[in-house]
Amino acid sequence: MASIETYFPTGIVTGDAFCNREHEREYLAKRFQQNAHVVLMSPRRYGKSSLIAQFTVEQNVPFSAIDLLPATSGKYIKNAIINGVTQLLDAIMPRMKKSKQRLLAHFAKMNPVIELSAFGQRIKLNPDDKTDEETVMKLLMSLDEAAQEMNKKIIFVMDEFQQIALVENSHSLEASIRHAVERSKNVFYVFSGSNRTLLEDMFNNMNRPLYHLCDEIKLNRISEDYYIPFINNAAKATWRSTLADDCLAKIMALTECHPYYVNRLCRSLWDSSSLPDVEFVERTWQTYIEAQKIDWVADMISQLSINQKKILVHLAKNPNIQIQSKRVANKVGMVGSSIQRTVEILLRGDLIYKDNNGNYRVLNPVIKAILANDKYS
Ligand SMILES: Nc1ncnc2c1ncn2[C@@H]1O[C@H](COP(=O)(O)OP(=O)(O)OP(=O)(O)O)[C@@H](O)[C@H]1O
Ligand SMILES: [Mg+2]
Image 1 (cartoon, rainbow, N blue to C red):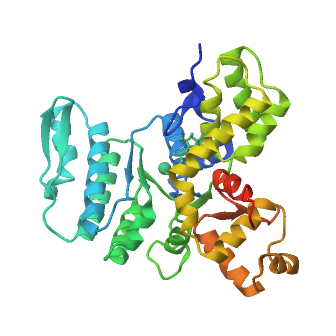
Image 2 (image 1 turned 30 degrees about the horizontal axis):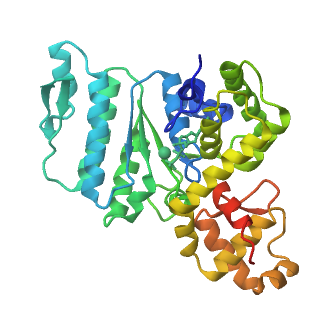
Image 3 (image 1 turned 180 degrees about the horizontal axis):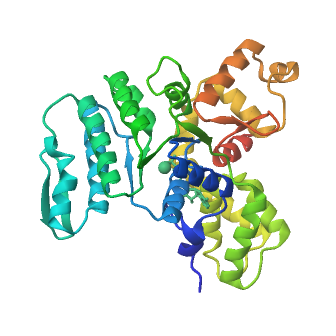
C-alpha cells in the first residue's frame, strides 16, 4: 500500500512525490542541451531543490549540488567548490589507471591524490595557497577539461548562491566564476537561491561580473490544476477513493498552493485511516497552525514594526484589495508614502508577494491564518 512517504515525504521530493513543474523541467532540459546556464529563484520552500533534483534524475547524468548558505568567507566558498568538483570527478573517473592519471593531469597543480575509503576510491584535491578566486577559477576550468576528456556532460548546482555577494572579496570571486562558466562546454551550471533582491542584482546589474551570464527561471506556486489530480492519485492509492471536491478545495484554499504547506497538510491528513472530509481538513490545519504559532510565528510577528504588522494584518484579512487605495490608508491610519515603503520592505523580506492579479498577499499561509484570526485590530 502506498504510504505517506511515497507521496508526501519530508525534504526534497522526486518521483511519485513530485508534482508538475512540466514547463520548468522542459526549459531546464533545453538549456542543458544548449549548455546555457540558469539561475533559479523563488521564495523559500517553493521547490527549487526538488525541481533541480527531479531534473537531474531525469537527465541521468552526474551532478553535484553545494549549499552556500553558511558561507561567510571566500575560503568557505572555495572549499565548497572543491567538494563539488571532487564529487563530480569521482563520478566520471574512468577505471583504467592510465586514463585516471590522464584525467587527474588536468588538476596537476592541485596535488590530486586518490584515497581508498570504506566507500571506495575518493579523489582529494589540495590546491596550493593561491587566492581563493584563482583557485575557484582553476577548479572550474579544470573540471570542464576533465568532463570534455571523458566526453561526459555533468551538472553543477550552487544553491543559495547569493551568499557570494556578501563575502569580502565577492567581486573577484564572481569574476572568476564568470570566467570559468562562460567558457564551460561540458559542465552545465544551475545557480539558485531565495534572496531575489541579491540574486537579481548579481545577474542583472551591468556593473556586476555575472551580468547576463544566465537565463532566469522564477519559480511560482504549483497550480490547483496540477495539485488536484496529484492529490487524488495519492488518495486513490491510500483509501481507494478520491477526495470530495469540497475537501480538495479546502486543502487548496488553506495552503494557497504553497508547495511546502500542501505537503505538510497532506502529510497529516494521510495519517488518517479513513478518507478525510472537509471538517477533518480544517481541524488538522488548525492544529498545525496552533503548533506553528507557539513554535516560531509568534516570535516572528513580535519582531515586525507596527507599520509592517498593520499592513500584514490588513492583507491577511483582505487578500483581494488594492493596498494603495485611500480607503486602506484611512483604515490602517498610514499615509500613502508610508504604505508604499512598508510594502517594499515586506516584499523584499518575502513576507508578501504580488499575485497574478497584481494584488499583494501574505506569502506564508500559516502567518496569514494567524494574522487573519487577530481579533483586536
Ligand atoms: N514539485 C513538487 N511537488 C510536490 N511537492 C513539492 C514540489 N516542490 C516542492 N514541494 C514541497 O515543498 C517542500 C520544499 O521544497 P524544496 O526544499 O525543494 O524547496 P526550496 O525552494 O529548495 O526550499 P529552500 O528555500 O528552503 O531551499 C518540499 O519538502 C516538498 O514538500
Ligand atoms: Mg533548497
